[in-house]
Image (tube, rainbow, N blue to C red; front, side, top):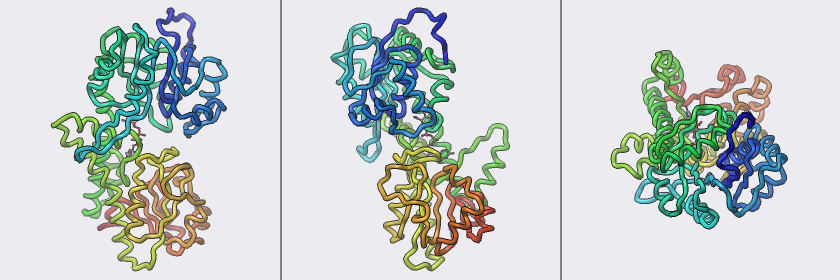
Length: 432
Ligand code: SAJ
C-alpha cells in the first residue's frame, strides 16, 4: 500500500464511483483505503445492500477483505444515487448489441450514468471513464456534458481472477481531453498504482484498450485455427505449440472451445464498428465465435461412430474461463445449445458457477449414467482430480469417454482408470 505521508496536498478529495461491478467496486474500495472520501453508486439496490452488509456478489480473491476494510475505514459509502464530488469515475458495463449484421457497443449504461451525474457535476470537476468504449466516445461524452470540466479516459486492464494484484501492479494509460485533465486523473490513480502511469490523449487511450484485447483475441484465433489444421494433419496441436514457443520470438496462445467473458469476446467489435479496415479483427472474432459449433460438431461426429442410443453427456465447467464464477458470453452455453439441438441429454457440473442458463448439478448427479465427460473450462478442480476421484466417477458412468477441450486433465491417470481420452486439436486421438 502506498503511504499518504510525504504526499503533496491533493486537488481531489471526494470521488463518486458509478457502477459497483468487477471494476468499480475494487477501485472504489482501493481509493477509500488510500484516503479518499468515496461514494460508490449502483442502480441495483440489492447489490448496494449486499455490499453494505459486507457480502459480495462476485467471486474474486481478496475482494471481500478489501471491501470490508474500505467500509470500516469510514471512507466508503455505497448508495443508489450519486452526489456532488470533486471527481466522478464511470465504471459501468458496455455490452455488445447486434446491429447491421455486426456487434456494436451498447452505450446505454454509460449514457444513463452521465445523465445521472450531470446535475451533480460542477465546473472544475473531473469526469473519468473506465468502461471500454469505441474510439472518440470520450470526446462525444465531453460535448454531451457541456460544462467547464476536466475529462479523461482511464481504461482498466485487470485480469478477472487476479484483479486486486493487477489493479495495484499493472501500468496504466490515461488519455485526457487535454493535458491538465490527464494530470489530474494521474493524481488519483497514483495513490494506489505501483506500475507506471502513461499520459496521452483520450482517443489514443481508447484505441490502446481495444488494441490490447484485440491482440489477445486474434492470437487465440490463430491458436484455434492451428488446432483445426493439426486435427486434419494428425498432429497434436498442444505439442506443436509447445515446441513452436521454444522459438525466442514466438508465443502462441491456447486453443479451446471459444472465447468468452465480457471483454475479449466483445471489445474487438468496437473497432470493427468504427473502421472499414478491420478485416483481420472481424475474421478472428468470427473464428473464435464459431469454435463452440466446431467443438459440438466434433462431438456429434464422434457419437455417430460410437453408435450409442440416447447419448447423455456431462459438461464439466460452464464459466467463461477457469477459477472464476462468471458465465457471461461463455462458449459452454453455445456448445450445450448445439448438443441439445442434436438430441443429446446434457447435464452440467461447475464447482464455481452460481448463475447459468441451464440447471447446474452436483458432480454425482451430473455423471450418473453418463456416456462422456466434456471438459469446457480449465478449473483447478479438474486439473487436480486424482486416481481415487476418477475411479469413483467411472463407477457411476455408462460409458467411459472423456473429451478435454482445454488440455487441462491429467490424461494418463484417466487412461489408467479405463477412460478413452479425446483432446481438442489432437489429430492423433480425435480427428474429423
Ligand atoms: N482463452 C483461450 N486461450 C488462451 C487464453 C484465453 O481460449 O490462450 C479464452 C479464455 O478461456 C476466455 C477468454 O479467452 O474464455 C478470455 O480470457 P482471458 O483470460 O484471456 O481474458 P479476460 O477476458 O478474463 O480479461 C481480459 C484481459 N485482457 C488481456 O489480457 C489483453 C484483461 O487484462 C482485461 O482487463 C480484461 O480483458 C478487460 O476487462 O478488458
